[in-house]
Image 1 (cartoon, rainbow, N blue to C red):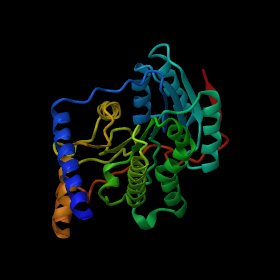
Image 2 (image 1 turned 180 degrees about the horizontal axis):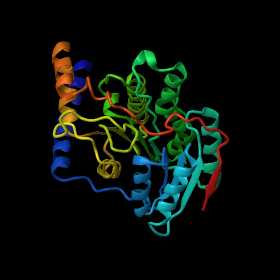
Image 3 (image 1 turned 90 degrees about the vertical axis):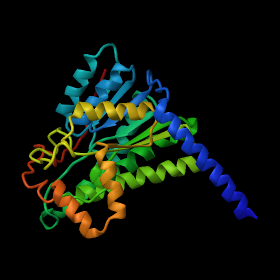
Image 4 (image 1 turned 60 degrees about the vertical axis):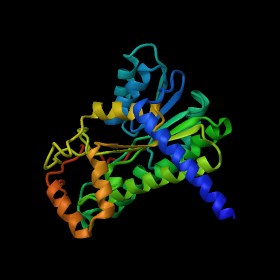
Length: 316
């Protein structure tokens, strides 16, 4: 009897949510206001992190910028201040170091307040064939691209749970959905970040903490310098993405409280095909799209794997 009742309830919910999703496709949700929200962005010293900081500043948010690169972080600080009368705090933090994350998080809580929107954006890439990757860089990839998400969420989620209000944003990658040649450590760490974010989303939902939102972002190659030298075989199918375009898409997804966003839309097709075609068909598709040559000319961002210590802090 319970099976019948549960099945009827499930089908009713499934139909209702299906119709709801169709309605939202036609009539978008109202975008939430972020003025006065404390937004912390890791990897804010360049690329997508910097652009997101500028966009949130224009919306009146209080910005907390984290990056291991103090020079880049302070440049973001300067650019954010140029947007107007905005509160912005810049901290040097090595997100691969758990104790450092907790220490700087304590400074943020004391000097700024409880973070209400946490954007885990910091990332590194080695771009080497698997057997050529030094062990310490494999560990570094996981520490920055995945483990840091655990430490930042542990640091800032308790306050969100207490208030039942907040937003967790995971910047993963298309490489966190599909393995890519030459990106074994990067891809694996991005899979891990996505899996963590998705699991935490479900955990909070089951705990009825429904006002703590989650957004998981999976963009393709961006022209930020991180993948300098890499090219798409057919740019009309998988174009190298302009960072400003991605930043706007991510901002909209956060404001609309969307759980998943994959950029570009063609990546959805590739992801679906991965589940239904044979392995040989998948390899043939990968070769057609240039997966075998994608990393051939990889250069990467200068000093991407540089280790720094003794975080400093400057705010205004």
